[in-house]
Image (cartoon, rainbow, N blue to C red; front, side, top):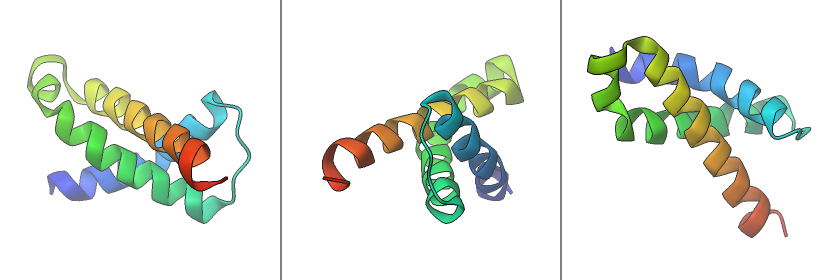
Length: 78
């Protein structure tokens, strides 16, 4: 159930991350990057879930998505 939750949060995180970084992307890459970022950020910050609750998972998902967007823009999009 934890991975499914990260996928759902990831879709929202991708949207938030693209808006925070002022980036216009199509919906499929936005969701895909958000899901991947949520999995990365959620797994890295999982220990915060037990300490701070579900809000930490959202923060981790958004940070992970922002990291992947930055890497994508820097290395892949060229």
